[in-house]
Length: 166
Image (cartoon, rainbow, N blue to C red):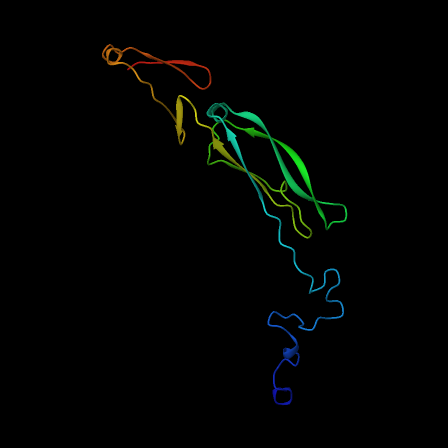
């Protein structure tokens, strides 16, 4: 066979390396044809939600507004649509917390909807700072109060009054 045709594949000179026909075919440009360009998958939507330390400590409900591309009825063209989502911030969330909603992102022809990814940022607080799961409170007192071991009254993030003795 190789002596007659010169190779094992008689169509090797007509095909590209990836198997496509270099000259096109009768139905190559038809819907779903092999020469149909593949559209890229839609990108995920990433949103950073800023919360106060009080909201991250106690938990709260936040309303988030964003825009995403949705498919129209023809299944090919897209349009921008405004979306609103209520997000429950649970007590203990931090900047390391990431919420992912699998189908709330952009839509594109021939692909599953992308993800909506919500990350959190903490707004600075006047009195407290957070280090991992610890709250750090810095209080300045006079030398006289320190020598007399005067107690320090601290208002906690949940509204309690805490008296700390030195």
